[in-house]
Length: 112
Length: 112
DNA sequence: AATGTATACATAATTTTCTAATGCATCAAA
DNA sequence: TTTGATGCATTAGAAAATTATGTATACATT
Figure 1 (cartoon, rainbow over the protein chains, first blue to last red):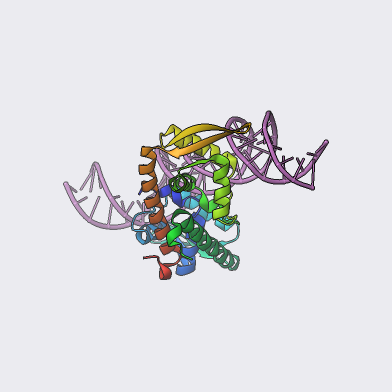
Figure 2: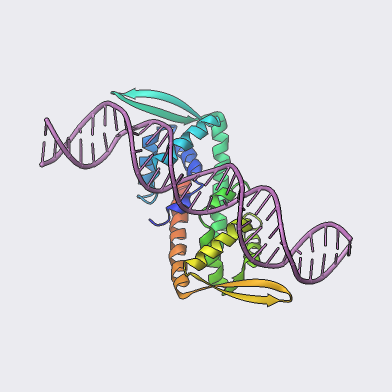
């Protein structure tokens, strides 16, 4: 996994996409889900995750719901209406980016 | 083009790939080529390009050859042997990244 | 009883990597 | 003659990450 840095800039999109698929998730769950989905290729650190979640919340894209599980604290995040729209935008941008990059690094096998 | 930030972290790979395809190029040429290949979606700024080129050179991946065209100065960059190997590595990492990301944001239409 | 690992939140210092702004200089065309 | 393109480069600042650290609960192993 030497390519962690390629994921730079895509964290918000990844979080939003997961919340679109899973309705509501809490921070730790997100890190585990990403690790699982990427077969360990992407490991989201707390220092990246929590500031990102807080920013998305501050921007009105996520709502928080605190839950107590046993004696443990969990903060469930879910998309707001505005968050759903923004998710669609970001996913479209991501597709565009992936297509462009594919074309750049491997013109012969472009997706288009 | 709201997705410039997604390209964060991929500049080195892009430069190396271009030099693999084009033998030798100079800075300004690279910016124009990228703009052309991405249909304007990615615009490499000088503040990103030159430090990147200088770093690749310092790392021994690129050789420089200064040329005078008219009264103008040009610095042609080309891959060293070590640079060619690193290009292969970076391109493989990029493919892996693209596949992973495609799978993450659009599991149904994975590349694999 | 102690130790390690997993769960769960969070922040702070630092680094990486970019954008935006600026600077210098050549050259062609209007 | 001045505007836009070509060509190099640096600097200030912002964004987004990594690394390190901190707090605390829960569970399994030694």
